[in-house]
Length: 192
Image: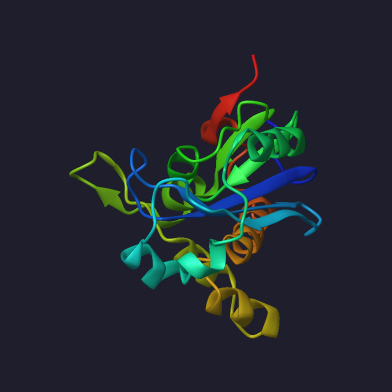
């Protein structure tokens, strides 16, 4: 029997200049642990992109907000490597975020969206021959009654990588509490 990933893990999220991994860049990266401690939360100055109007309309990150921020370079990657080394890392849309951060030092990388989409919603997408991906806000709303001030603040600040990290943590913990997934089907990468 596989053991659930319920403690001593990290949650990571990014915000980017767009959806094209070959062109777009990270604008914000956040890492929290399973005890809700913020380990990293920083804006990032893109090296090549100077404007991102479509992404800005979603994530609210302006060029002025990142003007004096560090770039995503070797030093930032080293910081992330140190944080994730030998830890399980949970991401909501892991396939997307992994285009912008290298988590090869992690013990394992898991996708919360895959668990939610395939084990809870189970809405089939014929075109992709797979379950339809569900938004983080959909997953969060599924488990939260939005009655607490903390929950309302999180949903109001969706598309900020720190808020999204807390929402992902909440969704992951709810799914594990309810007995969904033992981790084995949603492990994307692991150290061999």
